[in-house]
Image 1 (spheres, rainbow, N blue to C red):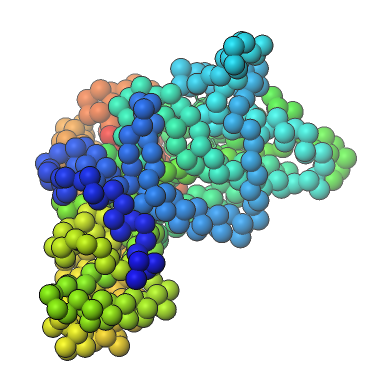
Image 2 (image 1 turned 180 degrees about the horizontal axis):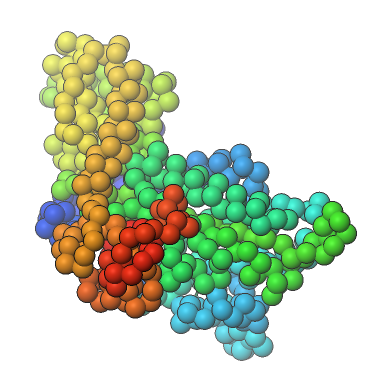
Length: 494
Ligand code: 86X
């Protein structure tokens, strides 16, 4: 029986005194978030401020994310590679513009053993420079293109804002795609393709609805021609960027000398893209779906999709455990990620624990259920109890997992839609932001108007919807009243 119980069943239980959350999500979401990630055993602190431990329960989610996205990358022709962690200072500084605003965040290796290095080495904050140094030697002719490479790794950015597990840590896990193309059009196709892979993944797997759009000039990556983004609205009214896809144009191919001999025998600078998502997505998923009992995990990404809890009664233990094992085998057979919690805790204790951990379905098996040949299924997202015959259990669990997955996305979408508003004056703008909404407004996007908005409301332009980009609207700017304008989504941001 023990082999049917995964490590997660009672790891860390012994020393845990307070179970359950002591604060409501609606009362103090920041404290709620910290308690959820620690008490559900997703994350732990470390000796270095801003660096966190991803415990097995969250790392398993990251592995699920990696498995799905990696397959999508491969299906679109990308290959994985691994580039060095350390970047010589001279190389990092090659494209000055893109580094400028970031330099306070770079962490350096300056010595080894007891001697100083000749040149200090940056711990990668992102890998453009080290990768494009290689690319300048790998790309020779149009036959070498497109070059489609992805890397899974961690990066370090020494931020000073308050750290939050998954949402803002000094080291985090991510993937970064870096592609090289013979034409601008092909690179432009690539950035949209990858953005759509991200959007589809975040919605269909994490059940988090996102808006896709283009960053304004003020918010784009300085090294890019333009930046595409997916953003979601969190329950505290702040927008969270869940992924970016940059059209780099020739901004890096020129300083890094990535040139190719084209079909017409002419040498040309290549066109490039880069795109990435990180463990930050996990933070967004927690914020969107969690409730006062703890995590609520979308079935498609949950490490455990169903937990079987035997309701043990004196004298009937053997029968109940045998019955629970039969249920376990039936679920396993259907491919459900199932766990049988036969540990030595009370059933009530286990209910709370697995609710805290956000397992989508709980299956209860007690003496009454055995007598009637049934089991009780309890949905984590709604609390609904469903009694079902033993034979029908596995099929019902599979269909319920699908129902929960789509219900979670729909609920989140409804909430986001209820928190979207179109405004045409500063007063309504302020009021809506105060009420935790994302605001649509026509804006000139002059630095004066953006600054005024930031000052008065705390909001920044999050994106221009893809369908609106390039359309000059004959509508007055929400701040200066001038025309033409662009339709922009604004919100306070993480
Ligand atoms: C921007 C750009 C880009 C590949 C992505 O957004 C997706 C994946 N890279 C990353 N960025 C920096 O370039 C950067 C540079 C330095 Cl030196 C730094 F310290 C922090 C940075 N943060 C973001």
